[in-house]
Length: 249
Image (cartoon, rainbow, N blue to C red; front, side, top):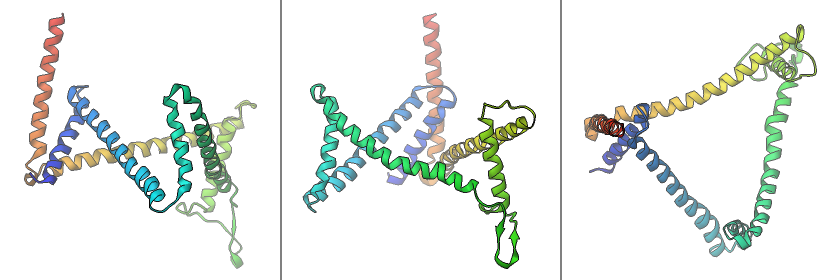
């Protein structure tokens, strides 16, 4: 059997086993789930060994003479002392170093991305000067720096910040500003949720596309035959489950 055809049968079978969870939790779904987790962990371990240990440690040290890499190797070995009770205290130095370096690298990027970038978008000028044409007002929504987008961002930031300002009662004009902030928050949450749903839908479309493609006779019709086999297996499991419940009663 061709490797492509075999891969089509395996992919189709595992996909149908995963879809059986729509019926209920069953051994077919657990089989596919455990295979997915096991293969993923195995692939990650092998890939990490080949990439990190072989290409980033062994070859540079022994073939290129980069002995400075022995320092991170020593730090990594100190982390493994966590599994030795009497020497577990040595792992604290390795974890402290990693947390310190990680914080030093992450904090500037976080401040730049979530604070400075937000401030930059908020303080853009509402009106722009265009040489001899004087003041211009851009209505292009596709341009992030357009005047109308700057106004929307400014209103959104101020209203959202006011919504979380609880020292003043949200009544009268303040209630309107707070309601506007809630609207912007709901739009942001809705966009984030919609993006997540679309990402999941793209995965579903990919699986359904494979099922349709592998239903071709050139692959041996795996979708048709494995769908019949899966439905039959579910019927057998369902009857066994019902008979087992009746015996217990």
